[in-house]
Image 1 (spheres, rainbow, N blue to C red):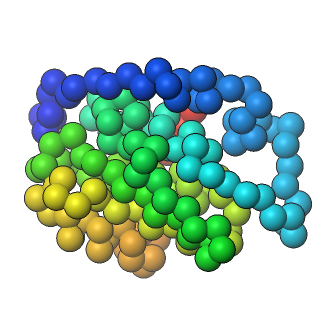
Image 2: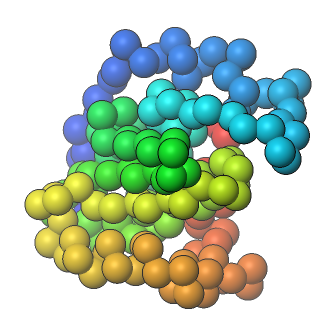
Length: 163
């Protein structure tokens, strides 16, 4: 049974065009980045990567559920660091770890290896915030959860595949 059987759906028309833009380098195989070439990223590009991830319980995107928002993407290019906050739809969401893993894995697959990415529950938005954050940002736990034989990896792959 779903934790939130009737989630509120949000539409952000302001950012809609960038998501559908065929010139977005993350959505096109026409672009290639040499290993030694430095590419600058901004919050919009990072948001565009995660906004289309689908929720594990609903056939809706994380953007539609207001789980991810552009103002919750923080980038420090000097330190190659990205911090992304996400907000589960309900404070007792049992899928928070899976949503966070999906976000983390999507960014890991899409960004150059030089970036350190932390994915954190928006403060005050989940009853087990500390536990979820600890699990999501522990390399060994993430690696174990995403082991190739893991059923969790199958679910994460389903969530992050392009629609």
